[in-house]
Length: 303
Length: 320
Ligand SMILES: Nc1ncnc2c1ncn2[C@@H]1O[C@H](COP(=O)(O)OP(=O)(O)O)[C@@H](O)[C@H]1O
Ligand SMILES: Nc1ncnc2c1ncn2[C@@H]1O[C@H](COP(=O)(O)OP(=O)(O)O)[C@@H](O)[C@H]1O
Ligand SMILES: [Mg+2]
Ligand SMILES: [Mg+2]
Image (cartoon, rainbow over all chains, first blue to last red; front, side):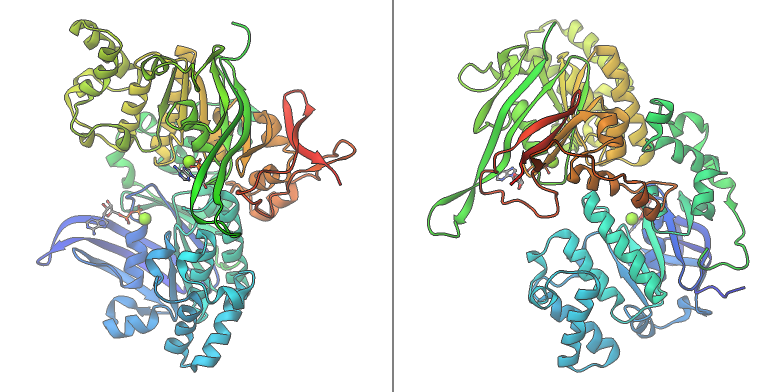
């Protein structure tokens, strides 16, 4: 069996003050990502997707803190690393892209320079070579006229182009894991499709594993081999993406799928009433008492 | 009634753009809406789709009287809603109402729900306090809230409940036409399903006509009777929901439909499902294939909506 690239074991975190947990947010989340695999986390807002990714990146800020569990990356517990070691890992072995690229880009520097800095910082390249690599990186994320576009400032670009720049920066150092937190949520559907295609192709080409976070099951389905469903700080179900859609086991997953208007279903079966999760589930607080984590088949990887 | 409830004819909205034009001092105009015409029938849900900036909201705002058209007419039951003979805001409010994406922005934070819902009734001459209370109560029930919640203020409600309040406020004067601008875009999946069900129930109960704007195409397919596809200020395709979702003709519509992420399908499988482009009448070409953005500062080349099949129309230009 392939060893997991990332092994999240019983991760717990919450609002912590003076070493006391005031409020538990993640209540023991476990999942594994194999090298080169695209794994999706789906859930409604507040279910704990973003805090999971921030914990992995070592970017949880006050008042949040990890209270238990382990984050094994290539066998090493990220929770044991110093701030400095974590910083070296970030951007280099684990990279992240967000919903709003503007918050992660420096508005005062050209995008070419910002990508070049990744090569200088993490790979010790000289300025000249780094600049050439930055233009190549822009070309690899299918930005038209990359040598001219490298001179643009972030605000001169559309949302879709800015997200491409973020992807170029994130993949600059060939990380083992790319974490993408709702990277296409703010984009139009045609632009979203292009960005998803890009992430999918580039990561497959380079063997980069992806942790893809979205509230949109359709988006997850188009990019991930396996998916975990989060609800109220718990992973309630995990399965291969197709199997999850065809045979959801957990009450909440079933509710979630039934609540979605599914394209094409109206012409086949007429307009059905969407499932109201609250009316089929008597007690939401009991939802996290069960979970359906289908054990991964041993061959794993590119299923 | 014969004929449409609402008729929009050759609607144009232009916005002056700050800064001089490329060729000197002439003031440039952005053509946000560029000759849009359509009809809305009693009891139907007509949706407008297209990417952000294509003019959907500007069209909607023109209809509810929040944006003055540069040119064109909007008629409700054959009476003009804009121009010199337009009705007063008060009269218009009984015909056409709007529900916004962010209900919070449309509610006064310092007014209780009761006050927010009672105000339009008072403005329309309902003076009896008991009648007002009754109507507010009935309306709250209709949208799935309880009458005792009327004393509360907007910040005390969740996003889904606020949208219910926004809907109650739009319906309190019993309008026939309701414009819905991204009514469920800000909501989580489970809440979104509840609000979609509610909108469909209310439509049936009160025979409402909806003009809906949504970027979520699966919601549009679920709710609409007919669909308009807008592209840079123009309608490029118009048809029944099945025409648009199962037999899209215009290249832009086809790109839009193909781009929808679908649970259960990988994107490769979807690409294979797209059929070849339908044949065009001879001497005609598509006005644009959607791969290059047209210049929104110049008037478009001559083109017209040509009927492909009954009720299914596509924008074509003379091929050259
Ligand atoms: N800085 C914070 N302080 C307190 N609670 C927080 C903080 N950040 C997130 N939370 C809480 O943690 C839960 C999970 O949040 P998040 O991971 O952002 O959800 P998601 O990304 O799934 O929408 C939410 O209930 C949220 O209110
Ligand atoms: N008040 C305004 N002044 C100037 N430009 C505007 C104004 N309102 C909208 N626009 C522009 O008109 C175009 C259409 O906008 P809008 O109708 O909001 O698009 P949509 O709702 O389809 O996203 C956009 O380019 C937008 O920037
Ligand atoms: Mg989040
Ligand atoms: Mg809009």
